[in-house]
Image 1 (cartoon, rainbow, N blue to C red):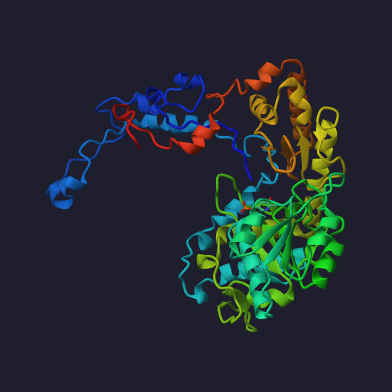
Image 2: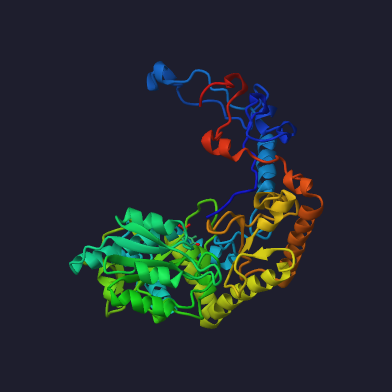
Length: 515
Ligand SMILES: *Cc1c(COP(=O)(O)O)cnc(C)c1O
């Protein structure tokens, strides 16, 4: 879940007077308003072939006669895009503490490897004999992920966390049906990611919510026991849960579930908290997806390509999406599509190969010791930052966290300040806001994930900014409520932005027309 609190320039024409932005937009002329009739960014040589009549090619009735595009010089265009690029907020310019999303730094060497021409120029329909290198990568990362998770059956076909979940639950369903068990329910703690109940519903199950223990932040064990029965196909448990906390009774949960033939699905999106230190397969998990883009190295955000590799226990391997990459005794690799119990393909061309490749390079780069250090640092950084904020912010559950923690913004209500205001004010201090109002079980939630790639210095600076905002909230709340003050646009009318998205520049003369 992301909250995009960073306002972006939309190329919106101020002339339209229907802006979703408050106040400041008149001060932001867009490149479109610099249009001068006849101005060009380039010129073409004189025509040296017979001219064709456009009417012969595209019938007049199907052509727009009037296409008022902005007319600009090359420099106008270059400045427009350069200016926009400077307004981008990215992990490569600033700290990005977006809880649950793991906006960590991805080393450049992984980009270099993904751009090697031998990989970049592959065509997905090339004969197997000519893509042995790519198959080697997929086969090896399958083995690496099996080792990391303790679950031997792996497919890198799913391209996102939610996609990995759906793949896994469809596999669980196939396994139950094959055994003649028509189960109807999937148990999901209320501290799960929202994609979990959506996945269960899409796979045809009824999602049954289990509450959480207000003191420990873990699932309500009595509620779990009361709802667990032989109609449960699976329990989907997020580890660490979305409060950033480890479920300490995970082994008992797995044992009790297995006693009634219920499979344990682990949402391992945030495996960066555990990698190298705990293998979910070893504590009884049957299926798990790993978000390659959160745990390893795939630049993400803005809906970019990701990876949601699915890892399963040996008994579930027959149901993996086909084809699976296998290795013949002579050392060559092949796609094995001859798998009678497979749930079928879940994506074309074996998923996002580039995301898999970057993660493979990253795993090799770190090695097993490096991965263990990664997991330890993710946890250390979160606990360090949490401790720095302890005097000024209230934690929803105050105990040692894993890779992230959730603050409860309710104490600021007495000053008329809400979590949204705090998030907006952090923008003025130069930071991307943390995730807010998620998880849903925490009122006024502020969810912070520093990630393992940040230094102590960065965490100290961010904590100082948070503490300053907390002080402002107490002493000058009106400043916080009106934030951000230093951005090109002020607060967005978010409801209107969602209901009436204004995604396209319209020429002035067309103002007021529907688009
Ligand atoms: C991010 C996340 C997901 C969803 O992953 P996508 O790649 O965005 O589909 C699912 N579960 C948890 C716990 C997550 O943090």
